Amino acid sequence: MKKPATRRRTPLFEVRHSPIHGYGVFAARRIRRGTTVIEYLGERVSHAQADARYEDKDPNDNHTFLFTVDAKTVIDAGVDGNEARYINHGCDPNCESTAVNKRIFIEAIRTIQPGEELSYDYQIQRDDDDDANVDDVYACRCGAKNCRGSMLEAAKKPRPAAPAPAHRAPDRAAGKDAAVRRRATRHGRVTERSRRRGR
Image 1: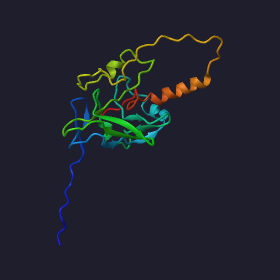
Image 2 (image 1 turned 60 degrees about the vertical axis):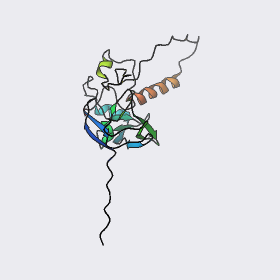
Image 3 (image 1 turned 90 degrees about the horizontal axis):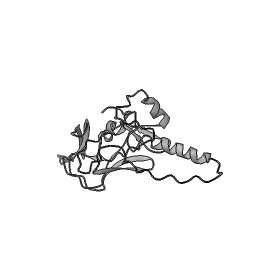
């Protein structure tokens, strides 16, 4: 007896050259809002390991496959990574990154039509010691009407400094926490600032 033919479903997406940058990920069929498109995979390393891996990179090269999970862990999709590493930044994105049990997923935030490129906002953190050309290095070419011109998070307006309380000893614990926060976010939502790998 002949087995009934099984119908193969079209893959959710495909990787191909992108008008935004290098390779991109494109919807191969309609993706409904709320769909988990893909998990961001790669080798899980410490921040120190990630920094050491790419310490010799040209500071003007903005490519990376690093994604911060938390204060201890970074995913390096350049090692054992999957197609998620090719999803480009967009200032008017159709996806967002979400963390579930220290795993990173890319989810659709609106319905995406076949042929449309997937994107999410990298929101790369700005640092006080950024070079003057940091916005040029991380220039955005997404083409959205509301494009802010940079893959970096929007620049914050400086707030007036509050007066320091008199005779207060430095809070070493708070300083340590702040250092941990800086280290944890240095890699940004998807990128580690000065050490990005080419696509």
